[in-house]
Amino acid sequence: MSTEINWFVMYTAPRAEKKVAQRLEENNIEVYLPMIEEIRQWSDRKKKVKRPLFNGYLFVRTEKNRLWEALQVQGAVKFVNFSGNHAIVRDEEIEAIKRIVTTGVAVEVDSSEIHEGQQVKILGGPLQGFEGECVQKGNQDYFIIRVPSINQTVMVTVPRKFLEIIG
Image (cartoon, rainbow, N blue to C red; front, side, top):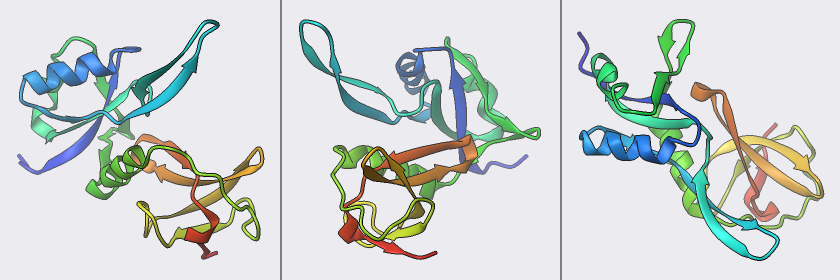
């Protein structure tokens, strides 16, 4: 049996991501739950809240033959599979997600010259070196980073001066 350690994608019960991550850590299982901060508006106040970047998902780093252990914690539902194989997330994808989360606030961009659907590369800033697709949402350009292993995309704004058209 292979003892290779990989990042696997766990699906959790609704709104149980934080508790599941905490229980896994208590069982000495390495886990990564990307959290983002957003401002929620109520009728009487505004409040900063942290929420998972991907609702219902977290990442577990372990050996394939130990996945069942992680599923024993309350709130864990299953590991994501594609065609019968467990979805594995590459270290580079985890690093990309960590960089997106730590980058934080969206920056307004100059939308000149880059058109929707064009492939671009980031030349500077915390996401330097990443390639992705440019999309427009409203009057802003967004840069999409795809995380194919969980069929998710992350949209971030990147200043125009940091983008180079590559296709």
